Figure 1 (cartoon, one colour):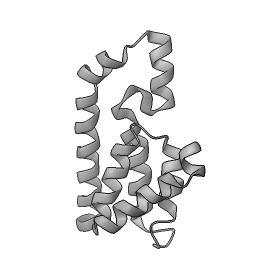
Figure 2 (figure 1 turned 60 degrees about the vertical axis):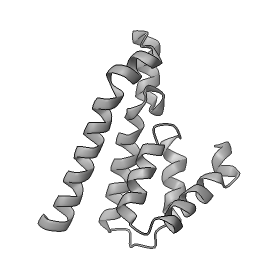
Figure 3 (figure 1 turned 135 degrees about the vertical axis):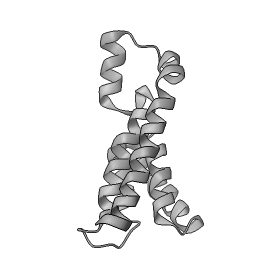
Length: 121
């Protein structure tokens, strides 16, 4: 909440958008950032970045990226934090054993979404 109220998330998102003209890459980087930054303020910051209509597929991609990207680190999602407490999962164990799987799942889903959006839908 502090990052959002200071405007840092919006500035980060705008800086990404200005530096990288491809929205798919920007959204993927936002997804990766959601592993560390809370998903809700990150999505809120991204809402001001794009002027697409509300039914544009970019919003589905942002929702996918923020939700799935948060699972790359155990601290990136509320479910991960709960699992840490209930199952006594160590951060470094998760990082070594699970993060790469979550990253592969994120990339696979991202590519699948883009292929479906561009060639099927």
